[in-house]
Image (cartoon, rainbow, N blue to C red; front, top):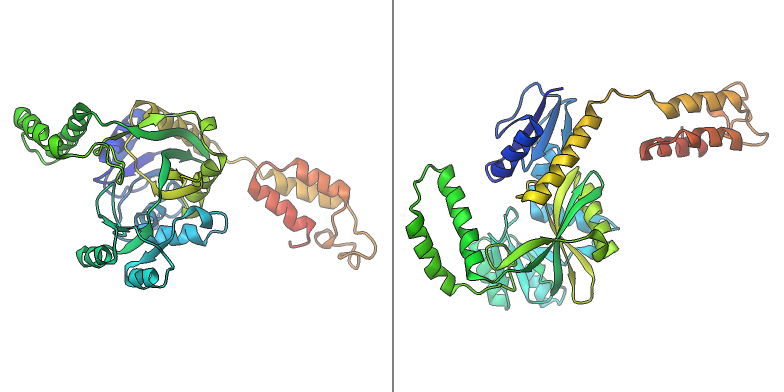
Length: 364
């Protein structure tokens, strides 16, 4: 089967590396006539119709995830996740919400579409909110007093890798991270970078940096990711991360999340094309290899459909139950214990289980 990894300009470095490791085609352009498409931070201006093409992170789901305000609304609307989303208001309602005591300062202003620490305003007083709105902030969210911050890599309903943000306040580390970013940017735009000059400038700039930054905990502000064992973090946070990916309609994603000083779990956002290092890269490579192999396997016969037919042929309606008026029509027969056991023994997936429940409850 032909496979294609569809990345964007912001996710091309890792996207190309993954495609090479998986030995599949890749690019920023929409593919044609492919059997399987992986959306790796895919950027489209409108929804796309891929027909019957199999996908991992459909580009439409990735596009939906890019609107961070819309995603917060989706997650907040889910009963299982509502308490895991910090309060937020769109810009046109934020000041009124503060005046009414519906949300308390400090607030973080954001743009609907943002990456990393860009498009962020720290609002300590109401005048900061007004200025942020005039500068382009589109929504505001309660500031979380973070105790611990994580990135959980979710793939097909499971966490394949987990990292925790830890302080990395060394000047050398700050300079190295900024140098790598500058070199990457220069390379993309065919700019010859004078490394000596770059190091001199970065050496001067680091003197003005506050490391680590306690507000924006990014790798450019004195923080780094460190791998951790899943059993060292709260189960509630793990479950919320998995649920968030599912609610957005994604097959995989890197979930930025945190616990506050009371150990309450919060979902911050989900990334569909995260930058990966050695361990996380290998985890994704293995997960994709296994999933692609599964998607390429021939479709097996519908076990439940076959079991249902056999079970219905073996059972008869009980007197006085729905279906008893038409014993010659097995589709209308109430399912007795023997038939139900036969069907349940054939169940292998949630979809199959739902089908059995429909039959048992006579919703067929």
